[in-house]
Amino acid sequence: TPFARAFHFPGKDPAYYITSTQDAGLTFLATQPRGIVLGDYPTGSMVSWRTPHLPYVAHSFLTINFHGKREEVANWFDPATSISEKIQFLEEHHISYVFVGPEELKLGYVPSSLGLIEIFHQGNVTIYRV
Image (tube, rainbow, N blue to C red; front, side, top):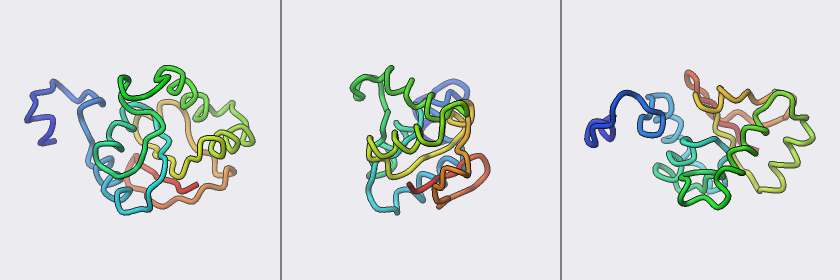
């Protein structure tokens, strides 16, 4: 990306590199009503940079309880976590959107039985409205 080239970041470190599908997803998300977005780091950092939304977890120095929140996100995406626990988490934290990109896919997936509404899908990026 031009951002990565401008700052000479080596390789495609996900903290500094946005894929074309992530870019498309973020561009779409920016057009949606404001809300809180669930995704792992660095997705949350991209959300705060590219959209008016609030990420559940973003930069370590700007997120209160960064490590704890990352653990919660990992637990949420874990297939072993029950649907009722996932729903309770979304409600307790007032999550409006779930952003599933390359980093989140490493953690698990969003089960269709959760009942979230898919509002964007391109390549390996899917965004759900809660």
